[in-house]
Image 1 (spheres, one colour):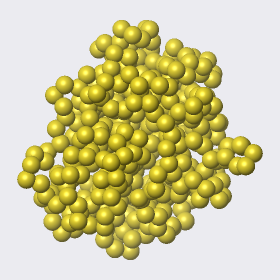
Image 2 (spheres, helix red, strand yellow):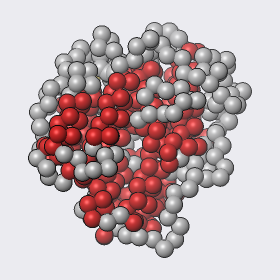
Image 3 (cartoon, rainbow, N blue to C red):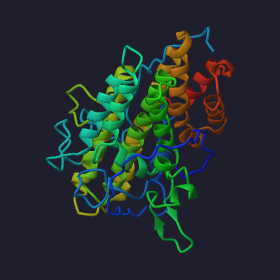
Length: 402
């Protein structure tokens, strides 16, 4: 399927914000898009049993870088397809005959930089998990305060979420065609889809922290924080692979945003840990995609990459697997929802409203009818009005084996 940039109504509510310290950074490098402002037509060759993809903006690595960085009586367990084969053009350590020899061929990620500041952000996510959403007890105000301190750490997540742009959409420009940065005042309101961090994520995070600290629905607000960070890690993994075109060490940040800087043979952390728990085959495919990005950047090693066709091929491979991983996380949480009660059920739905809605953009490109089902479901205030069987079928049909 040929990828193209699309625009659709956001279903994630924007709520009041709590001012948090955000580090000031230099302007980001701008990546020049390919001719059609999207990815190469590699998706046109995707077979029917695989699913599906790039442009501008910041760097998330070190501080001294050029920028910043209701129930169903049918089968309900999300099960990965028995056969999950890569495309012939995909990079895979096990079978990469179509790719020249490169740095990824030993099966490990080879960093560009000795120090990768993104790893500390995933450390913070994992610590916040023990305080809040993975806490066996109801999180207290002290727990939320400690988590917010981690979030607001210098060069931490709180310095990156407000600048996050969704590279699936074209950059925001003024009337002269000059690219505008989403971190600048007034720009997020011009395009809340591209400027997803400041326009959508920051209000959710700030509101959840305020409510949690004040003892309002702590379990639910912990789930909202987790969901927003999952969304952020997905988009950041993709974004850093795009901006690696101009800043090579952004490939390191992409790797770290997905798995906390762990190697394929090690236990993943962050988003990689979550995906590996519910869909290990998909986790392996995402890992192949990360290694594909690194292989491309090894083969295309100039300061500014020039082989954009190979880049877009690797991006398509990575994003296809990432999206399948996100879909599998949603399906797993829907299974939990079906047996949950009380506040746990409310928390599951709050999480699903955010992460499930993150699937709408790609679903609209692949199957508008299925996308409408997904969007309408996750914009519902309660799961009681949602036919989970229909919703599950829509997700499974739209996000098949990567």
